[in-house]
Image (cartoon, one colour):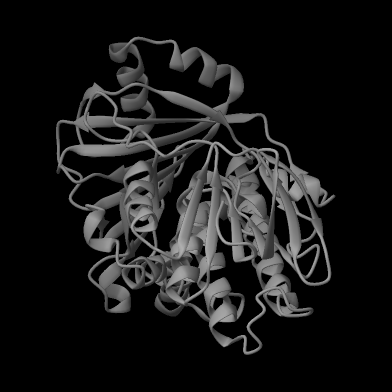
Length: 397
């Protein structure tokens, strides 16, 4: 066990939790990280992790500050093309429209986690508690008493970064608001006959959105395909040729034939937001423990890293040496809850709008897409918000 008490105890060692731990240690705080197992680097048959994320430039700033960006082999994308199955109109977002060379980067989840853990395990201020189950905790006036593996540890602040099924959230008695869907998402890696040219593609099909995101190789794309659950179950059972043929038909894009596909993984699609982010002065929820949003925009992990950046700002500014002081996290929690509610509502509305099949709605939608595409200031503002540098993103960080 680490020194008792620790300043910050982080439950969950995924990318968000590990980044929070490394950042807090960099501020001179003592940190303990609780994780069921040491993260492992994961690769499919094509040499890439099937789980990838699209990172915004604001997230890159954080990862550079943590000193791990150079270890991540990011695949940049400079353009995003969005269109729908039955529409002739499309909208293109270009990095050069806002004076940048990239809109973002595609990274493998396990590579990010592994890079963070290499730094954590070399950091003298961090203790990694592997395999220690969280039995429960009791917030006190001056600390939180945490039961771990039959022992008790005291921490001045406990941060729940333990995912959508967060034990910290549950044991804090925090309820959630869920937006159920009948969808699942399939994730895989595909090789195409033609290069992606650094363009991320998002196509809204009648039964759900399909994203094809550039990989490090010119002909490799990361696939995230949302669809009704029964179709997802059928498609993951197809052989490579059968799945590749259906993917090629669904994509309807200019990268030619789908030459090869990797293994497929499927997971339920849902949206959820915790009723409280700061249920006790010494308990905080971040990342998927605080909210889960639809994967269609690839924004979930960026919101989690936004949590980390905001958390580190509060820790850096606190002056009395107590990271769980009464009222310290109140404004942070209010901002992050508002950010989650806004993003969850926006993505739900976007998915519902593209799911409407009435001819009039279809016509209005295509006219609206054309209008946004031609309206420079509106499009530039959308790009900045997606990159994490817009006024809304900055205000709610």
